[in-house]
Length: 440
Figure 1 (cartoon, rainbow, N blue to C red):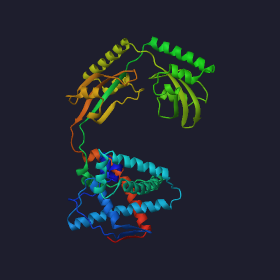
Figure 2: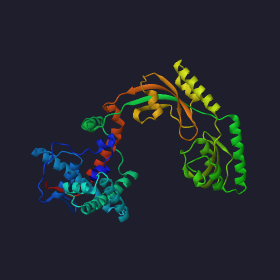
Figure 3: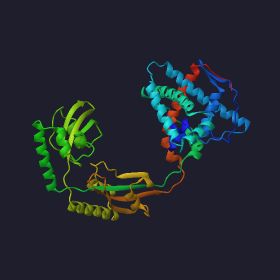
């Protein structure tokens, strides 16, 4: 049950840490004895049986063949030895500290996640007894020990990664191929995907609406520069739902998190300064920087959006229809994108291998029954902010559901194996420097 909490659901999680899988389960002897010595610690046989029990709860079948059974137990034991080596290294590191509050918070989360898998307290208690965890109180004590160990160990691993002590070690082509073949049976099916290019057009306000909004922004700037209350004006006038109720507060803003026109002004302002109105794809912003550091500023803003009319919507749709016709007539996509696409709104022009069932519903509906090369649209996009857009797409590739190929997973496997190789190198070093004796 502990592993089911920590394990990821994606392809990589399955590839990175697959538990041993063999034939049907078998009971091991319950008489305890020492099966490994790791430095100044020992691992009893009961700890191996406990770990096997965790695997069983994940549906892993334990082998009945004597040779396979011993190989399985040895594999489990070596995993426990690795855990102990990392824990001992972490305990020697004076920079690592885990509070009881952190441990109990982790225990509460883990306990709650497992308990929520069962419909009733009786069912939960029966499962604990079946799994040899005893009562909920005994299970919580076991969880406390496990979570403390994992928190201490994970702190060491995280710090080493941050300091370069676990630098990735690139795998060979042979390692990649072997990794792929060994993990194929555990992979989830590749979902049906689509690749397409798109031109996204904003519904633009009229010149008159822009001018009216600019005049309102100018008047707010004048009030603010005359000691007006920024928070009060933001709550009254701002049309940014994410910051309006906080008086326009954006918190600390790092470079790259906002549109370029906004950042270009915010990062050259002095604390306490009120900006002139700044026009972005969202409307006019009035910005105040409260505190400043080289890579980030603490800022607040008032957003004023020009009013859109039905005529503006018709104009945008007609432009999108002309883009669709130009695509059908063979005009180069890049040329159309340069002229019409909403780059300022950070819309992507190329969507590759995207799961079809994760597309917005209007995209899913539009590509139903489509073929490669089809031009589809205009598709109206409503992002919920009152600023609609239109998309015209050209289908580039359609892939049915099936097995992930080696090339599909190459980059993911390379990253996963590079980290795994780095950890193996680290563990080999710990084993070389520590007395390890296996008595299984």
